[in-house]
Amino acid sequence: MFLANAGASLASGMLLILLIVAGGLYLLPAVIAVTRSHPSALAIAALNLFLGWSFIGWIVSLVWALSSTGRSSGNQTVGVNFYGGAPGPMPDPPYHQPDVVGGPQKPCTHCHSLIPIGASVCRFCQRAVTSGSTYPPAPLS
Image (cartoon, rainbow, N blue to C red):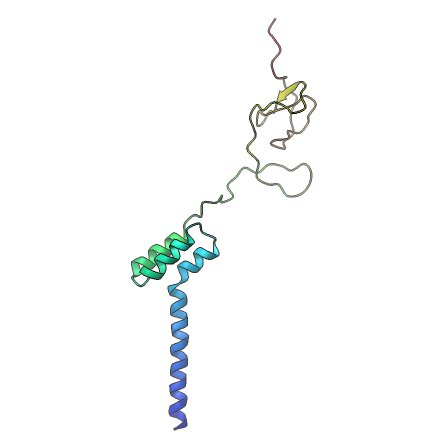
């Protein structure tokens, strides 16, 4: 009698483990979308919940969850940080923006933003600047 009860509890325990694993695999696309902070995580979870029972619905929701989240993938141009620390992505320079301080200016030899004549490092692209002409150019004589 004892062995019959032990076999039944073992079978029910195995069934419970199987249901938990199957449920985890069933909801895997929704978990991936939420973990990756996908912008469409709610829609992916709804598709997975309602159409995941069909193999095609599960595959579509899995591919959607693994698709690009719209954020940058790190393929940005990285500038040199002359002030210490790790280099970061370069900001888009405001091309030909007048200097706030005023005075004679020259274009940066790399990003062409206007910087003061005496600057040795461009404040926009953080690169060393070689000596160049002033802006506006001197009148032709």
